[in-house]
Image 1 (cartoon, rainbow, N blue to C red):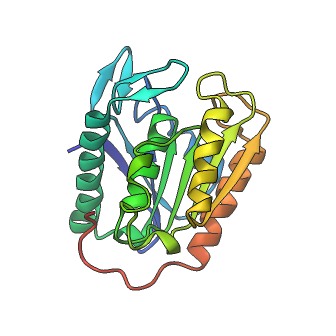
Image 2: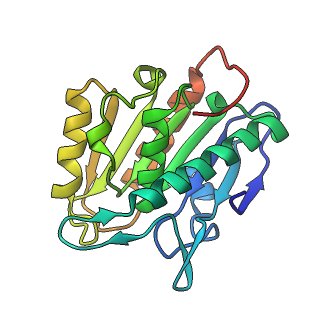
Length: 222
């Protein structure tokens, strides 16, 4: 099971599951909770499985011109994330329809991998400053819930780690395939803008919570 810290919210409230980026840990994004000010929400801060410098990694990658990733590592981490989501449902009674996935950089890729393929919709999903993988499997690999998925993807115009010219065409490809996502750009680098971007993420999550998905069924498996 992936290492994670859970901060319970009110009974029946949504829970935000947060996935960090390369070299960070589950501690690194805990300040996002007071920043987003989601009254009564629970939080689950997840740690990637592989040691990387002082922190952790979701998969091996080459931060070269084309940003190549280790496909086997992505698949492994995807399976482990699904196992954690199933644990949240079976052990804590939180179905995916009450879970908001938030991921940064590598964590963004893991969020997108999950929501694109999942058979049930999450309450909401947010991908920050990341990119995508396994485009050759689109749209055949898309989950049945994708048309109902509330998805926000954000990026910085001045990102030196994952330049926007690498991310934007993949997002445009998803839109051409009919994926209902919102895309937002900010004057930032490879980070989270605590003002405009954080406010947009908060609004996206609260709008989703105001009109939650119906029909939650057993099991959070893909």
